View 1 (tube, chains in turn red, purple):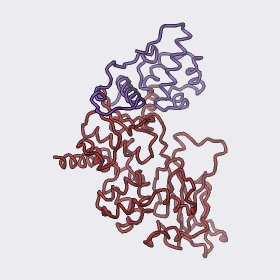
View 2 (cartoon, chains in turn red, green):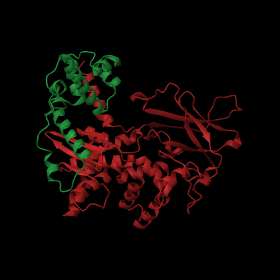
View 3 (cartoon, chains in turn brown, yellow):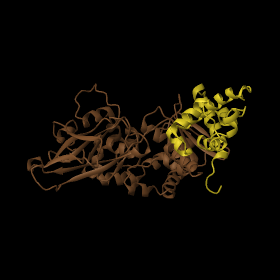
View 4 (cartoon, helix red, strand yellow):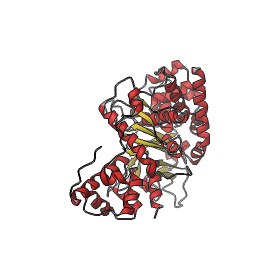
Amino acid sequence: MRRDGVLKAVRRAAEVLEEFSIRARIKEGYTRVDPAQLACAADVTVMFRPLDKLLGGFLRESDQAGIIVNILRPRGLVHMTCAHELGHFFLGHESTTDETVNIGTNSDPIEQQANQFAYSILAPRWLVVANMNLKGWTKSHLGDPSIVYQLSLRLGMSFEAMVWSLARLQFVSQSSAQQILANKPKALKLNALKNQDEFSRVPGDVWVLDIHDKDRIIEPAPTDRFVVDLPNHASAGHLWTVDELRCEGFTLEPFVQEARTVTRKDRSSIVVGGRGSDTLRYELVPVVDADGSGAGEAHRRTLIAMHETAPWSSSSESYEALSFSAEVDDLNEGLSRYERIQRLQRVRGLG
Amino acid sequence: MNQEKAGSVGDQRTLLAQRLREAREYVGLSQEEVAMALGVSRPAITHIEAGTRKVDALELDKLSQLYGQTVQYLLTGESLKSDTRLAFLARATHGFSEQDLDELSRFAEFLRSSRGSKRRGST
C-alpha cells in the first residue's frame, strides 16, 4: 500500500514535468527545475514569509491553492519545501503544514508521498544525467564531494539532498553517500576558493565553472561567488580576458596556484572540471556598481563572457571563448517572482 | 473584525494609505513596479501610501488585483477573516507557534480574498 503511494507520487512527478514542458526549460540552457515557476504555471500561489518552526505549508482555501515557504531557511531547503508542498497539491492532499521535508524521517504515508514527489521533481534521473553529461562527469566522479557539491548548485538543492538524490537514483551506494556527507559544504567552498583559512566566512555558494558550462543559464544567489577554470595557453602567449563590451560588471582575476592543487585533499585525482595543469583557475570578481543600481527585473540576467586573446598579435582574432548567463535567484519576502510578474502584467493589460 | 470606527475623512485616508502599504509589502512588490503597472509616477505611489494623494476608483480596483485584497478590505479594513480558525489547524495534534499560526491565518485569508481578484483562464 505504502509502496503504491510512493510509486504514484513518482509517476505523478514525471507527468507534471511532462505536462509543464520542463525539458524545454533545460533545453533553453537552465540547469534545474524551479518549483516556484512550476507552481505559478499550475495556478498555485507561492508566498515566501519568515516562519518560526515551520518549513512551509500547503493550503486549499475556497477554490485557491497556495504554498507558504519559510524564507529564513537555506536556499536549497526553500526549493525543496516548495517542491514538497507542490507534491501535496498535485497528489490531491488536503491542507497541511511541514516541519521537515527530509526523506525517510517521516513515517506518515502522505508525507512520504510528498517527499518522493519533491525529489522526483527537483532531481529526476534524466536531469541529473543531463547535468552530468554536460559537465563530462560519470558515475565514478560522484565519489568526489566537490563534484557532488557543484551538481547540487546546478540542481538548486542542498548538498545533503543532492547526496540522498544520488543514492535514491542508485548513482552512489548508501555507504559512499555517508562518506560524501562527512564533508561539509563550507570546506568544499573554501577549497574551491583555494582558501586555507578554515575560519573564513563564505556567505554564499561557490560555483566552479569551466568550458563545459558554455551557454548555460545558471541561477546563483546574489551572494554567490564564481571561479572559472580556463584552458591555459599562457606559454603560447594567449591570455584570458572578460569581454568588456558584453560582460559588464566583472573582472577576471587569476589565483596564484594552479587548478590541479585544488583537490589535493581528495583520495581521487579528479580535478573539478579542470584538466590538471592545463587549466588555470580565476575568480570572477564583481565590480561594485558605482550608482548602486542594477536591481530590477531587466538586470536579473547577466551574460558573463570571456575569451582568449594574443596581445602580441595585431589581429583581433580570439582563440577560445566561454560565455554563460547568471540569472539571480533572488529570494525575497512576498509572492514568488513569477506570481508578481503575472499580476503586474495582468494589471498593466487593463490599460 | 478589525473594522475601525468611522473617523474624519482624513483619518480614513490615512488608514487606507496604511492598508495599501501593508498589502503591497506583503506581496513583495516595489513602489516602482506598482507605479509602472498603474501608469503613474513612483512618487504618486509614495504619496498614496502617505495619505497625501487621493486614489481613484480605477486605481483602487487595480491595486486590489495586484495585492490580492478586496476593494472592500482596502477601503474599510473589513476582512473575510472567519471566526473559526483554519479547520485543518484545529485538527493538528502538535502545537504551532503564535507566529506560524498568524502567518498561516494571514495567508489563508489572502488566498480567500484573492479569489475574486484572480481572473484567470476560463474557470
